[in-house]
Amino acid sequence: MANKTDSDEAPKKKPRIERHVAVWVLMAMIVTGLGGWGVTNFGGNVASIGKVGTVEMPAQDFARSLKQALNNFSRQFGTELTLEQAQSMGMDRQVLQGMVLRTAMDAENARLGLSVGDTVVADQVKSNKAFQGAGGFDRVAYSTTLEQNGLTEKTYEAGLRSDIARQILSGAVTGGLRAPVALTDAIYAYRYETRGFSVVQLTEVGLPASIPAPTDAELKAFYDAHLADFSRPAGKKITYAALLPETLAPTMIADDKAVQDLYDSRADQYQVPEKRLVERLVFPDQALADAAKAKLDAGTSTFEDLVTERGLALADIDMGDVSAVELGDAGPAIFALTAPGVVGPLASPLGPAIFRMNGILAAQNTDLATVKADLVKEVQLDAAKKAIEAKVEAIDDALVGGATLEDLVKSEGMTLVATDYAPGADDNDPLAADKAFADEAAKIAVGDYPEAVALDNGGLVVLREEAELLAAPVPLDKVKDKVAAAWHTDQLQAALAAQGNAAVATIASGTSLGAFGVTSVTPPVTRDHQLTDAPAEVMTAVFAMAPGDVQVVSVPGWVGLVQLDQVVAATNDDSTAANRDDIAAELRQGMTGDVNDLYGQALIASQTVKLDQAAINAVYASFR
Image (cartoon, rainbow, N blue to C red; front, side, top):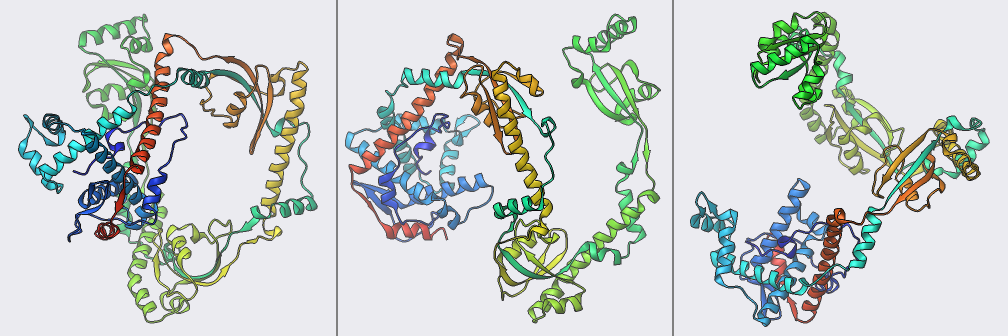
């Protein structure tokens, strides 16, 4: 089993308090220029990848750590990472950094004479769930598990002994750390202070005058000032030959049996039985059910009262819309009702129950003739997809034989289209929304050998790039409506902000906030409160204002007036002790991380680190 890193030994909750910690400067210098990945089967006489002081770094340990890191990240991303992907994220460097640090700590423990006895190691082995059987520690499971992971008992126990010793050393370095009381109090006061405020959103309806339509000159000026917003990105001039299901479908014969089979397969959709909206209140026994029904009949309790007495809510007893078959033995009585009402007690799978019927849903019987036209189209579309799939081999063979897109139009009935393709452009060809088309368009280049590409919609396309297209503004006449809409939005934002600024002055003279629109009042909340009807900038403004202040908040698409109504200091009593303890724990965690970082740097700086590049490369090569 590979040695654990510090992060493996004690997973840390991410501190909410920002920490400025020392970085691994020395480690970065050591591993500059290294990269690559490996697995444990690298063979040869490679026993060590280097040493720290006099302590060797076994190549097998390094390989296992790499493999473990790669597996962990692969599980996290949901796909197996390649060597190049892992290298681009710097995971190989992180593993090497961790191994150098662990070895430096081992060297320091050796210097201090710090170790643990066999009893401690044995206790750790016996408590590991991986080695447990029905009666506790299983000696066979222990040996088998280690063997499956390429470890001997001696190697595993030596690594475990080192892990425990490193924990002791780290604990000795950071064990006395305590969070400063003043800092804890300051963060607590900041985090748990609450503020109540009122908000009025300003809208176009409330403007004293509507925004006039822009003149051509105004549109041109706005267009010129925002050319980047009305430009096509760089792209490609593409010609493609396509065979699409929707184009081919009308030519396909829809077999009557296929249409009937499709209709029959949807019997639950076309033949819906009569249903009832039902609530079912179940009782532990018949006597309680009878007593409840008696109170209901006497008018001393309502159905809702009975539900409450059972400690339930209406949502707990709602069965939704159900058929007579789904109601079982209770079905006939409930379906005998011709209007909403209550029946029971009746038998149910959960015990005697009182049922309330709230509505009748008529049966829906849709015959084949009603939906036949739609089903025929589906059958034709499916047949078209199969016909296209059958043509793939012939089209591939034609391309290999030197056929052009124009040839395919003649021989295979494909449609030839010329388009200016640019990712994200509004006027893209409709096929550009197909991921397979977009992926192929992104990678092809002028002169590339054309290939048949299966589209996500069941179609087939062959692309050819004619030329590269540079980014360029779209002519104003082609985006005039878009420019006009953007101009209106810009003018509206400015007009609302101006109205808000004028309102602030009016409110300062004694006018109420409510005079400017519907007021939304928020009771005291902490600064991390998330608003549903206003942008986050409102919360930022609120916690920078003084009580009674009114401010305009203007962000794209939203303008409003915000008034701070009250500031409530964080409560300081026994009920808040847990929150203070959490903050202190976060601070201590951050301090522990900083001290461990600095101590690790000091350990490495105090010892000679030698890396065998050839051995490291051998481990990397084994992963390819």
